[in-house]
Image (cartoon, rainbow, N blue to C red):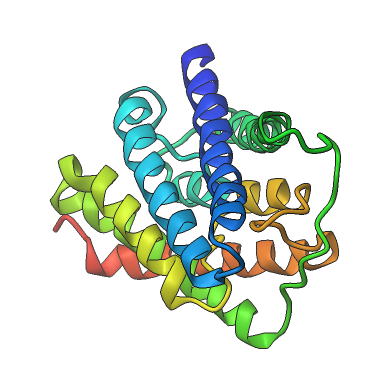
Length: 216
């Protein structure tokens, strides 16, 4: 349990350092070109996901995401006590990652976002983004387990661009990103709906995976 929780904490922490740090750096160096900033943000996020999943996957499964943990709990592949503890450390790890990133970039450590991300389109986007992510994970585990780190990293890199919400697809990430008033932020009042949509997307993926990736 200690190794699992340590891996989930550190993995989620470094994931948020990758997301928020690359967002800040991309925004600072892009000269106001949002497309270039998003390109830097998406590439860095996909790259760090590949590294983290490869490194921590053998220890904890490399969820770094409460929606993923809940999905595996529903599939009876994770015990309830482990799932609850993992979700708590994922959230704490994400927040810690945001705070450390602020320190690295000489920003106020404690802040909240003013970036508005709401509306029907972005809500639907989060359902699709999370459904796609879980489907990639389930399909990868079923047919190409050795490729899961690359599959997830590439999916998220692409989903930054093909979803209107830029594919948060992760409640811990969403909570953490509400605590940064930088390129990657989300206004705290808009956070709960994102999380609800993410859980809906995860639930749909679990249902579809029962048939699509059945072993028999």
